[in-house]
Length: 615
Image (cartoon, rainbow, N blue to C red; front, side, top):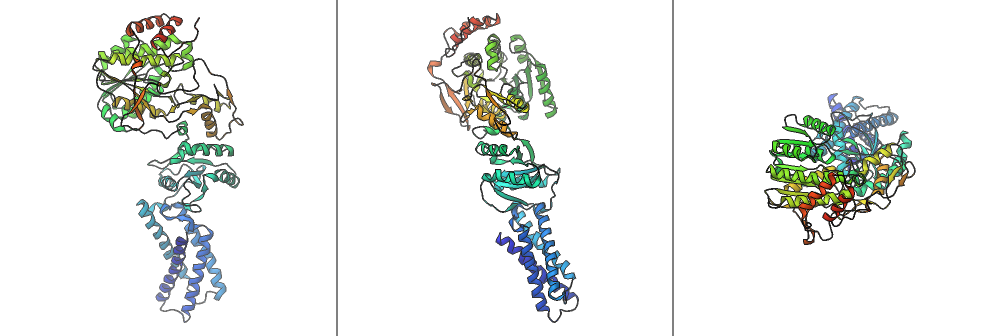
């Protein structure tokens, strides 16, 4: 700051010397006392500049991050310098011997020095020296930005370069690294660090008469920072938003529940998936669901040659068809309405479309509902998986992917037991065939139709209460992007034909559902149990307090893809005796809606499952 202030003041004095010299030379000579006049004028001009630039905080600017607000502040400081300089010089000798036109020359020369220095710094850091003259909107919402210095500079630069104007008006920056306190980035003052958030919000709300938003970007969206930010912001009644970097300036979006994961979201290597899917024919069951629709879009982005979306819901199919047409009207697609329980319909569809890859995402997943509709869960989750894998084998599909769940581990509910049995079905059916099968087991998907997140969002929007089954319940969570990436990575990393590989994602530590609920309430700028009540209702049928991703006797093997692990089963997990006959009997009993015997047979095929008393 001393160096930049010195440069600005010395530039002012040099500009005055140049202006006086030009003016006296142009008029044929200097006055007799030109030395005294020149020294006094130069000194007063320099001192006026020192006062003005210090008073307006120009010395706090970080030149390599300079923007339009910095340029405005520089011009304001130059104007204040002149307003101070002229009265002082007038009081000294009533401007005798001092050419008035030298003021205009000095201002012009000085501004050249000031902006040239800043533009050189901009060119060295961004290669865009003229960004200092990019204007910003004045009607945007007031915001405090939380980021480290480099991320803040990048976001502010993108906003100033946006053709549509900045989405917010950033009042100040709170640094997470404390690298440059007391300075400014592209004209935005650094107000402190994360510990100062509450104090800063309080002061700004008083000054502007409105509570500013809190914008987070970069590393501050990690859970390490988000918990602190949400707690402090909600205490002040401030909303927390995410400000990203995009080609046409930052875009402000609500903080997503995925920002609350107990680990940074996984970004898996896209190359194996691209190699697997490019120019291939892909068939997706359950294509209209949360996971299925995201899988369909990821396949479309991978430039498959043909894509089949298969689903039992007319509306879901309509929605995904619309999204596909909007994304790429030239992509060859087939939209098929059908139920995976209907073996003839599914086999017919697969044989007609002749896919290279079949992804089986169709399932019934809601735990309490499946407890009440056990036979339907068996017919869809087990029978549907059987139909899908047999259809794949019949049509000579090369790769098959089955989506499982963490609830398949030591299942306490019908949904988990049916998914575990479906894993065994896929493994048994793939053996000895040309089909390379992979099964992917993961936890809850944030924002999916069966997730607590949409429920909490509706309850918060209605003013509460937010309902929990138990204060101690915890779950593994992942974003829908992670879930689909994992499914496709599993397909790309599976074994040889005739094998069925099981994969899990390193999901970090499970999250307490109560902590998730509290954080989601704070996202809206509200206080848990003050603005929005939280109530516990007791565990529902089939629910566990905690879930696991693997059995105790399953071992994990690294795949070479960060975060993706292969599950190696133990010898004790061999399929039950007379598996195919008992499986056929189970499906026949379920089709007759004989709940008691269906659950009994399910427990025999999945020994870890103990059904409740069905009498």
